[in-house]
Image 1 (tube, rainbow, N blue to C red):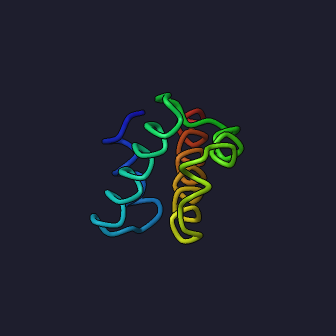
Image 2 (cartoon, rainbow, N blue to C red; image 1 turned 90 degrees about the vertical axis):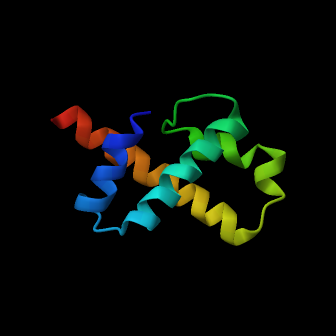
Length: 82
């Protein structure tokens, strides 16, 4: 995951503040550790739903993690077009 480019994309394309953007990047790292892989893909949310630690998290945390995956996938799609 190119965290520097992703961070910049969040700030400029999604108009996020620096702290909010860093939080999203951090959540992506958390997801990678939960799943034991470094790639966030289209099936990542389904893999998360099958993960016990994810399921034992609060609804708020689960929502934040799913949103982070969605943002990263959107970012990846824009990188393909460039």
